Image 1 (spheres, rainbow, N blue to C red):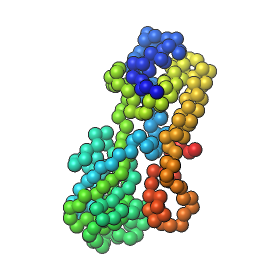
Image 2: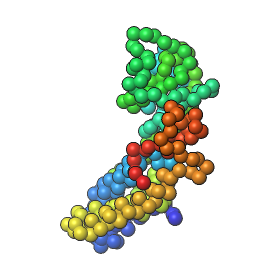
Image 3: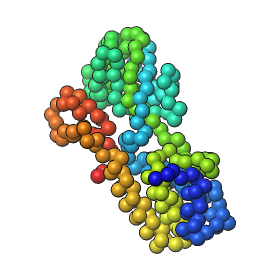
Image 4: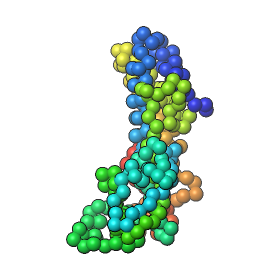
Length: 241
């Protein structure tokens, strides 16, 4: 399947709804398309096509690192980081712990420093435990932000989604266009079709890879101990299949 440009999406919507630019302007239609883009992007927390890797350097005496700083140099991610999946250094994998456990294990009135072994995440900020005692490279697997699409996008640009999602995005915009044209029946039909198509294509992209098994109800504290290490495939908080 070939990708679609923003102009091709506009043309498809107007062709189906049988309208022209005097009925719905490019700006209004681009806003509808952008709403559909965001709906797809945020329907699943860990779309694999947003996965990437980067590194950041610790600073002695500094234990907190924002997503903005992690997305910066030396391996810049221009779209910015959306989620942290896992961290490691040259020696070992850092284990994620909840902030409540971190507060208990590392009280504020006790100063600990050394090579980090654990990390927590709160308010778009990574906290390393214990506090790094010097400069070291941390390797991060992350989910990047999508490139914005819709209002302000060039007519010849394509959405930051795999090509199979493009006609689904058009279906969403058609539903919105029908609603704008005061045809709620057709709008509802296309909205149902959008959700059905998204569910079907989403299963292919959010599924577990064949080589990677899933372990349910494990009592082992860390996923790495059972060899599954792929935090992407734990409870995602996104689309429930």
